[in-house]
Image (cartoon, rainbow, N blue to C red; front, top):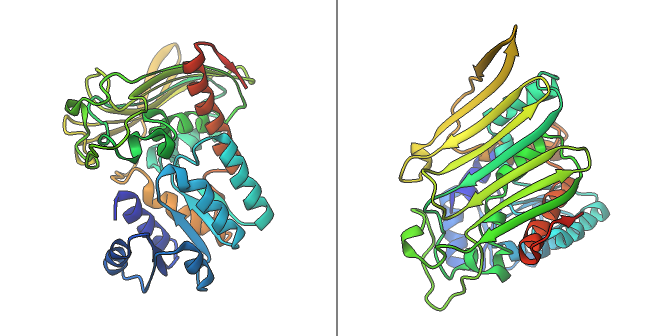
Length: 350
């Protein structure tokens, strides 16, 4: 199992859930995962698993192309769904997922785990308490210098992934819009770049094996600007491979009462163990600039465990959902528009 599977399992258990089955097209992979996590049942067919009984909810961790069809299949079978990011290949697929969830009367949530990071939780408390005022503008980044996840695999195949760095690293775009109150987007201007795609010197330290006969037809980086009908604005930068100093994962915002930043900086190896997390608030007091460090517990999993735990708590009526399907739809509309703007060379109205 990868990091997502490990943390999701830990989160479900933390909230009192029980992982009762593993489904994978590879029987060997399913059995290995079941053995590692003490799961009693394994399946290679989703329909068979859904009909087996004892399954109330399904966690979907597969290539992006299969997010929507699997989610819809599970929802139609009466199961709650927790889906990895991105929500789907495009906004149209998210609309179909939402329709299926509404018809089934089941929860549909997405693993926007950075919302569950201690830094994000504390900043959101201050935003909701009115300490920040209205957020006028924000800047979101998830940038890597050497972070291409292999060549020729599903990550670099548009038909399977929907896009490259933009759709893969959309977490900070989501987090910025979350802080801003998820305003309705009005216009998107953006440009993608495929510089360094195919260059092995820009592969990530955790990348998947290359496929010599595979496809590499997605972008390595994107820059964009979003205006909202509320008058707020957002600039964004995402990259797998770009000439920057180090990997940075951040959202900075400017409010009418205070500004703020949540940031994770990585060392040269690009691994979580070398990352430094910071959370700050910027205010003016008696005409003087005051920068406050917001102290929070360390969280090496970037909120993944608590994000999964929230899903179980929502199903049981013990917590409010950290994300709504309507927000996932709005996010994918922005991503779709960015790709359209890059292709057309013009701003796209929404």
